[in-house]
Amino acid sequence: MRAYDKYAYEPFAVTVDLAVLTLRAGALHVLLVERGQEPYAGRWALPGGFVQPDESAETAARRELSEETGLSDVSGLHLEQLRTYSEPDRDPRMRVVSVAFTALLPDPPEPHGGGDAAQARWVPYDTARPLAFDHDRILADAHERVGAKLEYTGLATAFCPSEFTLGELQQVYETVWGTPLDRPNFRRKVLATPGFVEPVPGAARLTGGRGKPAALYRAGGAAALHPPLLRPSREGRPA
Image (cartoon, rainbow, N blue to C red; front, side, top):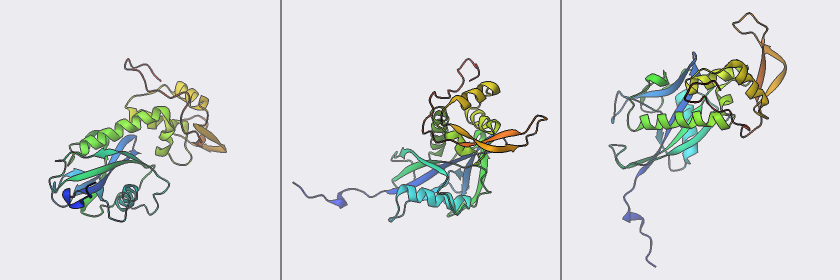
């Protein structure tokens, strides 16, 4: 059997890219950085960076997330691997394979441009493109992943503070899906789904309306929603 020759293959770099999403002022926002160096100097891109020799991809993703947001502890935030992007010409510098992640932040601070970023900014999702590299595709894939997972998991609570109203939870669905939902029907479905949310005993929050304060809830322990909370049909019937 012929011995393996590690020099027979051209080396390539591995990076992480982060599609960091949050809700601000009732709209879905994504964290973008302005590139301070070539390639694509002056263009907006998703935050990310090269995986160091002593790091796993997830460790690098958490490091980049901390550097760009200024949060010292990101261990409790939702971070999941999206997919790998490996087209040979995706980076003009050299062969670069990117492991992309999606992160969801409730009430995030103003970002800090880290590394070679000239600045960082929260940008409305609908106006975020065009981006450098293949980041338009990564961002679209992240949005589709999150929208789909809202149907079958309790992921929506990751956009919310630790205690939230059902109105705030509904806003997450409406913002990510881009469609209004019937309030009584949404409330009924959420409360009828075992383990989705659980009430915070004796807690309530004043809202902008004239009615009584809204009850507060927190994320339940269910890993999956049964039955799923399906998004509205194409005919526009409310969920």
